[in-house]
Amino acid sequence: MSSYAFFKNQIVPLDEAKVGIMTHALHYGTGIFEGIRGNWNSKKQQTYLFRLKEHYERMQGGCRLLKIDLPYSADELCRITIQLVEKCGFKEDIYIRPLAYKSSEALGVRLHDLEDDFLILIIPWGPYLDMDKARCAVSSWRRPDDNVIPPQVKITGLYVNNALAKTEAVLNGFDEAIMLTPDGYVSEGSGENIFLVIDGKLVTPASYNNILTGITRNTVIKLAQDELGIKTIERPVDRSELYLAAECFLTGTAAHLTPVAEIDRRKIGNGEIGKITGRLQEIYSRVIRGNHPTYLDWCTPVYKQEVIS
Ligand SMILES: Cc1ncc(COP(=O)(O)O)c(C=O)c1O
Image 1 (tube, protein in one colour):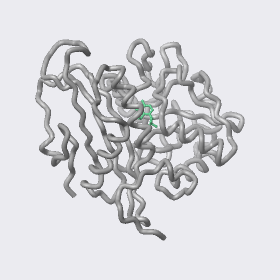
Image 2 (cartoon, helix red, strand yellow):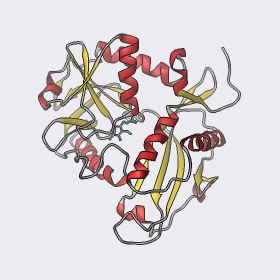
Image 3 (spheres, protein in one colour):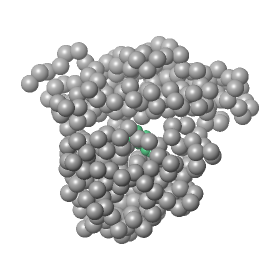
């Protein structure tokens, strides 16, 4: 299957979408990206884009922060994405990567007096953490404060922090890193938010704990409340609470909802997928594939011909 990209305002074959070696964003990390899922439903022969507009609204916020002029409305960005996904025609789970970036071929650290550009590419991609249960380690790399590099939006340059943590964890034999804030509270995974189950409730770091306020996080909070009647408490989380929690899981567009079996070689609960985690995982996977009637508003179908069963 050939892939296409949206590049310089048009859809082109992926291998024709190239940037020059002096591109500002390549040198200084001056870009804002998003990660969006297209979830394949084989029964309906349909791809559903999950919470598409919310991803572009977050991206618009990031662009304001980095002074990137994104010349499309959120609705236009959604339309372009649907067109591109349709053109690519993948019949499997995909990952969509929009990127708005400082495109001037100019050196010099700054955000002003530079041109901006925008692209979207698509790859077929299964679950990012490709295991039933993840083994995690608390990272020696801390998540930066909002006034260092704002973690609320997806700034390309910020992800060096995530890459340092991820590689440390993987080279030490773990699947994923859990980063702490500079003052030692739990923040998030290198590409996911984190939830604990404590006393039958969900507990997750608050927005002021240097997290990306994830769209999957928001989805899970709503599903837990509306489908299972389980409340989520957003508050600072101590490191030791990680080891003492009954259950733990990670959430993210790429990783979906991944149970955590172990942190720093300590089993979480009995080391198996917890009851609440398993139920949420099952509901979430139905919701993102357009199989849960209550949440169809979150799912944008791509193909015009859908098999109605
Ligand atoms: C650092 C970080 N935290 C959390 C998330 C989860 O965010 P979302 O659920 O919006 O994908 C991501 C993924 O984009 C991420 O990169």
